[in-house]
Length: 106
Image (cartoon, rainbow, N blue to C red; front, side):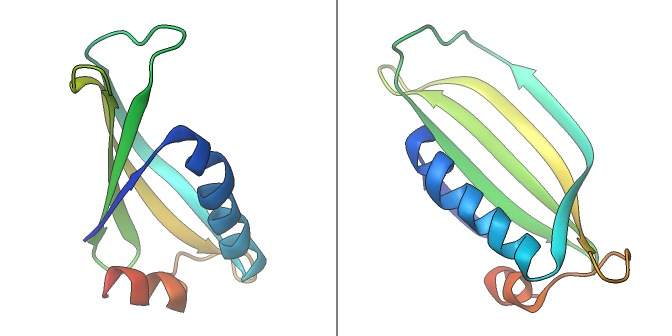
């Protein structure tokens, strides 16, 4: 399991670069299923923290659990569970690229 803690401005730069790199290396992460629960509102100007856990599920899937927490009172605002599958852009078949296997220890 990989746990990541990041803020929104880091998501814009680091996470998007990581997804682009994964694509450039021949794999796309495809969303298979999602569940999102809205618990409390965020308003303009609110600062928040986003957490993410990636949990491998067998050879071709992973579960990504994410939360959005309001920074001022540590209130959980949104939680989500997303099932993802890496797809090879060359074969069109599901497979984990080596860099993700190492990252997730699978």
